[in-house]
Amino acid sequence: MGLVVHPPDRRKYGKDIIKTAKLNSSCIFDGSLLHTRETFERIKTLQPEIGISVLFGYILRQEFLDIMPAGCLNLHPSLLPYNRGVFPNVWSIVEGTPAGATIHYMDVGIDTGDIVSQMQIEIEPIETGESLYHKLEDACLELFKKTWPLIRRGRAPRISQSPQAGSYHHIKDIKKLDRIDLDRKYTARKLIDIIRARTFSPYAGAYFQTKGRKIYLRLQLLREEDIGKERDERDN
Image (cartoon, rainbow, N blue to C red; front, side):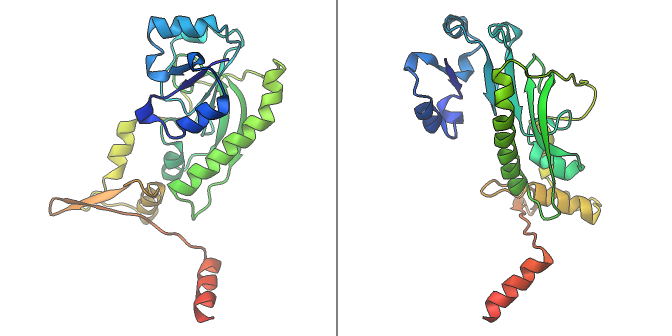
């Protein structure tokens, strides 16, 4: 058994993951070095049967994928083929595409491999990029728990997806989305969706520029009944 993690400057919960894995340091690998022959050979000696990828930021070569006879599975926080790539929580809100979680086999493409299982979740009108992100996290965990027994028994199905279907987004797409042009015409729906999709504290998100400065925007959305509760609490 082995563990591949992001390099220290890209880790979020690296220490917790490494501690939980309880592996010898010789079985823990830096993901940024997977392309090197030394790391490849070290992982190959472990004779891994299957690989599991979760929010891993590197594309794996076919040579690496071929090490594992049962394949390598990825847990992706979108309802493929929609929102391949980055920030699926944002694009489901902005583009109105279905949201959910998917387990799929990995290939040399980005989120294009055969699908094993999926779970769709609802996007509420008060959803922000932050709240949807956390809902997708929960959906991914629930889907994995439900699907893992099937995977362990070697009975995971393979449902092909068309690379031409759905949608894909790069980092550059989000950078373009973030800039609100004060002289451009937006529908109210479009502008609200952009701002709420990019509301995710403490990240900067959407902004407009004035007098050489960037002014960032965050949106708070409340249901009618939430307003009533706030009023009652204030009056009491």
